[in-house]
Length: 371
Image (cartoon, rainbow, N blue to C red; front, top):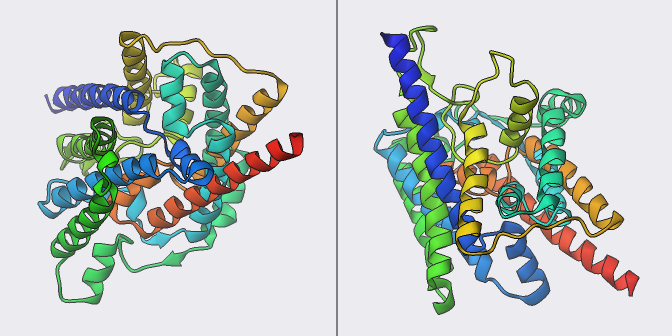
């Protein structure tokens, strides 16, 4: 009976993941949420509107995640982001690679899925190349550099690296209190900045910012609370049902693309099963496609030529290699990871933005040379 209930719980977790991911894809398509575009808008036009949408998503995710964790509904110590090793060099170099690559590829991992759902064959090329680069960096040739090179340069702490845990070890104040003080406080400051101009409070801005951030929180709850089993009947240890590596997780779009490609290639392998990451990839594509079809915005789009093809291939590879190295993307580290107040996540976020700035300036330099 326990095995049957575990299987039923796995199905429930994956169905909830799919529904939340459909909403994620539809909201991204409707609101034109785009991290790469937000950086390009600032560099090229001095327009901070879409960056404020991203900031609002971070603030919403921070607020919700901190409250859930403070209430004991999820345990953010059980995420990949809060391990005791601060991989600052991996986050720095990987983030720059990812940020630069997403400019060449016309968008990050989540944007690639949204564009694919809306009919972009360019995005299909990026999807495959990102997945190949990511899998090679998870388990292949570039994994050697990551594991035996970059990841060895780290600051090792005597506990979780999220800021509330660090401060709780340094003071007499308990971690739940620090969660509320830092999480809610940072969310309020960031949210106030994001909503300060009148144009930042438009329906589209609010939908993209609050909607994406709230969905990150919702998937934390599905994975970390609904899918949590205190004692798995097979291992007799705690388990996060439907997760990739037995930890709670939320939206991220680098490694899941690699696992999705592997799922297709090794479909007949009985050990190759669906998980939260793979299902979220399918859901985002479906949500974008549904919204694009419903609004008449579905358009087939192909590559423009050799240079365009090369840009998207190289950009996809850089995102795959850099994203795994940095342990996430503009969503995975930039919202999901940051919502745990992980030190490494903040470094990765800053590095991704820096890499994107370099990418936008590089493209501008190439256009100037062409003229």
